[in-house]
Image (cartoon, rainbow over all chains, first blue to last red; front, side, top):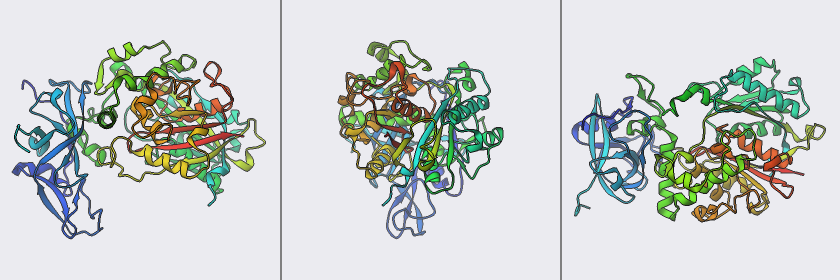
Length: 140
Length: 397
């Protein structure tokens, strides 16, 4: 690509660095409640299901399904790749475990609801942005 | 259970000049609207003992707020018993719902409520700005909304609401040709509103040929930034009867948010806050959707008005597309006249308060060329989109 598109980066804290830096090891990480197993996102000091605080960091498979998408045409900032695909994906691990993201490595026009995708990371400074690419035919 | 908001009534309304770019002091516009509303009720600033606004003085997008509580309090030398200003509310009209609660519980008698914007002038000719992109190279997004949207290049509610609309299209077969009727109906009504920003006729061909912003939204699915202020007086019903106008009673309000307060984590992406606020409203009244004579429903993006139509029960869930198709049911002489002043899409982005203002205009029979026929007695006004929303049902005796 001739030019890397602009991104606003997140402020990394002790509470969210598992999510924004897990990609350094190729891991898409979330909080998970040890006693009840609930995956938690965005991060929280207490489990929203059982309200306990015994929370661990766990890696998800990175496999997900596109719940919805939009192709952004508006030049909010100059970019080489309009329109680009913004999507909400749901991780395989838990119903409702969702992320807003971009679908990459395919034509924006090919993105569709129900598409199976997998995480890929794009490093920017000290963060690894979790993006998603389509699974190849034959992959589930 | 007593429905406490029925102790509240709207007794006066006011609006400043409204324009695409007025280049005027936003506090002056705000005070113009406030003084107009006070006079409209037959009151003086000495009578005002409560003050409410959304979002109050804050940063945010240029022109998003023209004045805060302190500005208006001091400029009018008000003597207040109660005041509130903030953004973490059930939508822009959440501040009016707060005012209803304040008079109902005796904290105030006459509350001045206002919302002021000057986004047209503040954003200039450069076009609508995204969120977070002017923060400079050291800017980092934080807070659950910004942290989990901006890094994915979703710089605007246009993107976030487009995600909802696309899911609605997928589940229910809604089309752009149907959605167009929210915008076309608004433009049709704006022709009868001398204060509307865009009044020239628009066709479905114009709509479909417009440039895309974020699929499925084109330019005409997005409201138009403007300058202007809107104000209204919420009075205790026992003090409303001897004022200048027949009071408009607050029959019920909806302020609920039962799903997650998040653009991407809400359980049902095809509706969001409108579902919960509307359900609560109908839980608090014996009136039913068929009793409503006119609906003024937030259209910051066209799709939001469709979600309010469904949530309020004017059509079934998912049936909004066919319901608005052709624009006859939502016309001024249709089943449920919608956004009779042109909404925010053509009237200008007065940000929530414009809908309640227009509901009052219609119930007082002062709509002029855009007045709905048949002496309307019941109106609903709703504001907010995504995980933000609140609504009021108001009646004239």
